[in-house]
Image 1 (cartoon, rainbow, N blue to C red):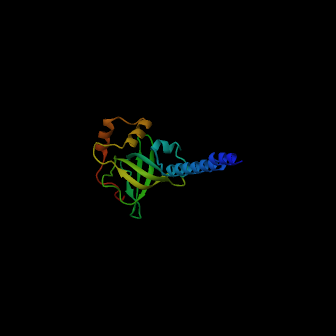
Image 2 (cartoon, rainbow, N blue to C red; image 1 turned 60 degrees about the vertical axis):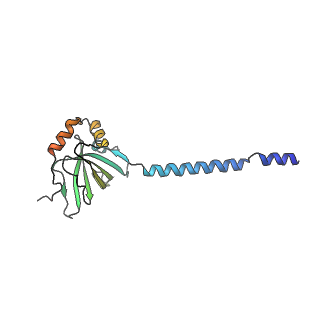
Image 3 (cartoon, rainbow, N blue to C red; image 1 turned 90 degrees about the vertical axis):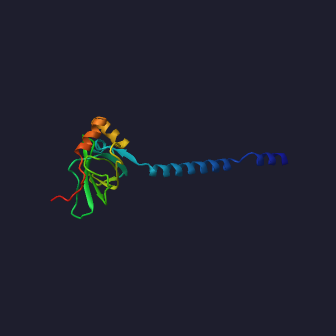
Length: 171
């Protein structure tokens, strides 16, 4: 009888194996959940226009600031402009100061969500390219998917069409 009891004590019980498995599964589920909440997807204006953005998703949108589209709303704080990939454009609103490098024809990436009517992207953050020769990778990829990327020609055209004084109040 003592030998049988000793054998039982040396072999893990099913309950402890199950407990270990469930602890591992719970830890994995929590980790995956946390990672999923921190993932931010990127979409171009054409993908937004095609309805490829999941309902209520926070995502990044990138493209070029459509020339002549930027202005300040009557509240004096909210900027409104359109981001285009050359095929489609999405109206963006942003309550705050835009980056100093922001201007018409500029490559930008914005983080936010579509409004409930899916007609306007409400940005929480707007980033502009950091020098004259850089184009954000996501913007280049969005333009390629839309069939409007022309390589270095695209950058030269954008720079030639840009203005230096964005979002003036419209008279």
